[in-house]
Image 1 (cartoon, protein in one colour):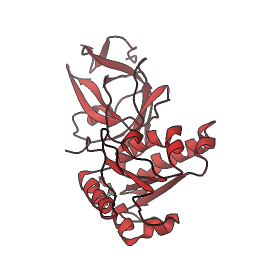
Image 2: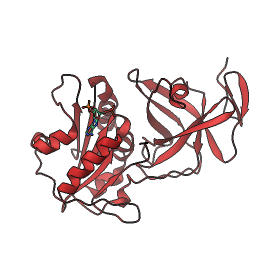
Image 3: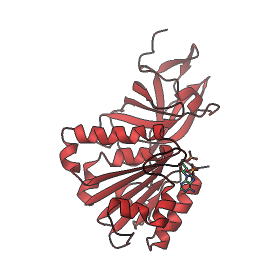
Image 4: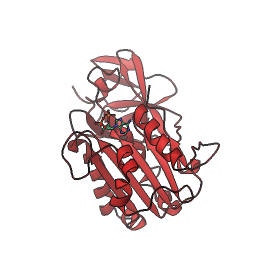
Length: 275
Ligand code: A2P
């Protein structure tokens, strides 16, 4: 079967299905599988679709004759001509069990309005920006670390990424490599960006939950930075519900207060992905 072209119809399980009104229907351009649990894909960006780096959109597929959507951080920066997403594969997941099988040429649906709290506008000015992520929680930061505005606003950007296994860190390493080799980003980013990958269930030079590494102070010693200080440090958090809570508690203990789009402050959390 040939991959369907981008029309108002597309084919799932050999049935021609009408695309719902009022949503974008975009074409998959590339898919990369990292592990049996993780993959990323890139797709066309609709003309006129605007978003702020760090926001999420509702991504979907027609399954049978019904669209199924789930919130996905847009992993590409706001200037990119294409859209990138980083996804988990849940074997019985209503969307991801289908999404993990997409191929270039397939159609993916996207609702028209992006939103989210992990945006630079929700933070008050500071010097050092921490991005705390676990698992696919790295996705909004994949967008923000590729946005020059992040480096206009902060002198130092620290991306922490904690996963169960070493193989799950690969997307983060690929992003660093891409930035280092990028025509204009390499210069904009310079040595401002630090990547701090850690693993919890395998041997690795940097081991442990980010919360434990903050509490012990090892994170700060390893990075050669002082402990958290609300005058200069800002934070963004994206991960599981438990990780969000535990990381938030530590930031609050250090004197940072939570902000939002309509009330910028010292750290922000994305709660859209947790049940
Ligand atoms: P751990 O292996 O100790 O559970 P998950 O896939 O379950 O979302 O986990 C992704 C990563 O987040 C794992 O390395 C996991 O560590 C870590 N993690 C899970 N819960 C927390 C938490 N409450 N605080 C910090 N890190 C956490």
